[in-house]
Length: 284
Image 1: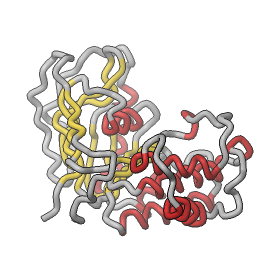
Image 2: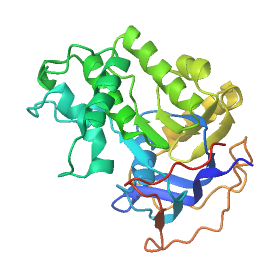
Image 3: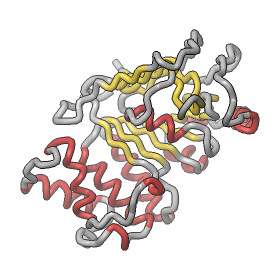
């Protein structure tokens, strides 16, 4: 039986008093590969931050399946590239969930890091300083860190931005490898052609869920037009909204429970995942 890795129940996320993701309900199944798409400011990055626990819900909940290790890769623009560190050190940070800050690094750990660096095509770059890397090389190093983390749930925020075509192809291949290993992968992306080629499932956001399900259905021109209209109609100072009973994203039975309360103090994130040595859940 296929089970959920993530469950959203009327989830609303935002900053201050302004919601950025509204009324999201549904499940992300274990072992699935999902793209999150939408215009700039549509709530894509906000959703990942809510999943990982950086943002607390304004309302509703996001529940992570117990025993789930998470690897989260933010946008390159959010990273301090001036940090004086070498590639091997960055990749080794993926060991922290298992070893802790002061844990002893074993010969097996060093071999794991070396394999990850080789897998992303950076063999020979181990001693290079991060501030000397191109955008594509840095993204490869960050993917190597994710490899070392060995997580069941992988969240990638716009990993294909500011990287060359060859790197995009290699990173997509790595994502496909994770999917083949029955890991759950969620990727924020802009290139809809790439999403159509490489991602079986897609969530289309326009601050609210517009469509969610099989990629070909989600990216139907009618849904894209609706998303654009929602985006154009939105104002950052818009008041708290009531969900529209007539708008339901399709696919996967992502049912929307629209009994939304106006209080901002009842949202919960249920992060039941264990970061240290938790066993991997059964494959879907």
